[in-house]
Amino acid sequence: MLETSARLLRLLSLLQQQQDWSGPQLAERLGVTVRTVRRDVDRLRELGYPVHATIGNVGGYRLGAGTRMPPLLLDDEEAVAVAIGLSTAANGTVEGIEETSMRALSKLEQILPPRLRHRVSSLSAATVAANRPGAVVSAELMTTLAGACRDHQRLRIDYRSHDGTETIRLVEPHKLVHAGRRWYLVAFDVDRDDWRTFRVDRLRPWTPPGPRFTPRTPPDENIGAYASWAVGVQQYRYQGRFTMHAPADQVAARVPADTGLIEAIDENTCTLRSGSNSLDGLALHVTLLGFEFTVHEPPELVERFRTLHGRMGRAVES
Image (cartoon, rainbow, N blue to C red; front, side):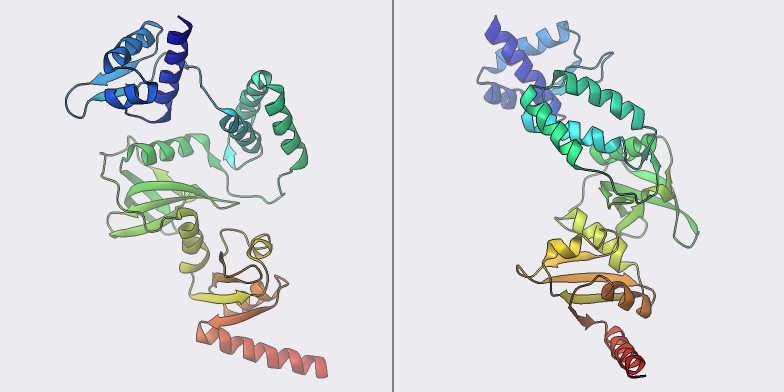
């Protein structure tokens, strides 16, 4: 009986990890026969968990939405990650979830083993959120976008660009990216036949979401780096490339993810790519980071540095 109960918990945990499992896949993971999997699924249904089944060559099992929340089975690292995430959410940029996050965190901390509770409390005590206001988005909007990304459903959205222009876009959402102060949606723009990055606080999705789509190959394996390039470099008139004579982690500490892309060259140097619509603004931004650097491109930026160098030198002589 104990072995069966333990196996049911493992089965429930597997069903929570991904949407669809075939019978043979579950049997292999549990070390039992497909027939035993069917019996265990029936037991979960008797306990009130809606496990849906489909037949055929591509048939399988999926845990559906029920009338109550099933127990979440987390390993040590997952439990710590959830606790830290809830603590962060209580001070984050998603509107309306602060109190809910704290309630969920208090419930989780009550059942954490002492060794894990100590890890979570130590980290919480040693960290503090920077006082940098960001664009706040609603939890409902984030849930809608995350669901469309997960289920590969097209969305039609109203979008407002940085200059206030309103457009209607048909997109295939891929990932949500948090760039420090803002949330971005990386999606394939169907009408423009290209990948785009949208600020979440500037979009409003139509409901219900559209039909499912076949996921496309993403523009970059590192979606976070792609989003940083799109919002911090690509959208601007001037796109600067610099060699920073400092370790990448030190430069990253002074360059927000939405203002530049950093790539390590070696232990002591890195490449910084950043953009601006103003040559002077871009030059000033990089200079005030406080590191030695070399500017490479574009040519007009290199020439602008030469002009500023001469002007500043003459100012000192005077």
